[in-house]
Amino acid sequence: MPEPTADEVAAAAAEMACSFDQQASEMRDYWDQNVGRELKEKLWALAERRPAEATKLMGQAFAGKKSLGEMASAPQTSDPNLKSAPPREFLNNTIVKDLAPALVQVYNKGSRRVVSDLGDILMKGK
Image (cartoon, rainbow, N blue to C red):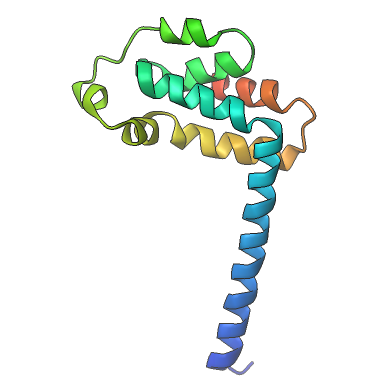
């Protein structure tokens, strides 16, 4: 089988990039419609309070077991680096590694119980 030409490789890469952009756009729309505002509120609450078990707390909040007020009263992390980190860095180091795959899992499942399924996945830590 002959090697593809540079033009063929470029065309295939452009097609893959277009497909990826379309899937990413569909996922953003899905999340904005289903949990966008609620997700932002809960992430903001985590960034403000900096709880010790951010992923578990987020899961409990989405599962309906914790309110925003209860999230605010959760024990803070004892890690001085996380306490002093900017909000985005705190979230990246605590919840994003678990939240991103959970979002994909719920999206791929096509769940009708988006919020509670997301909470269940986060509480299990998978």
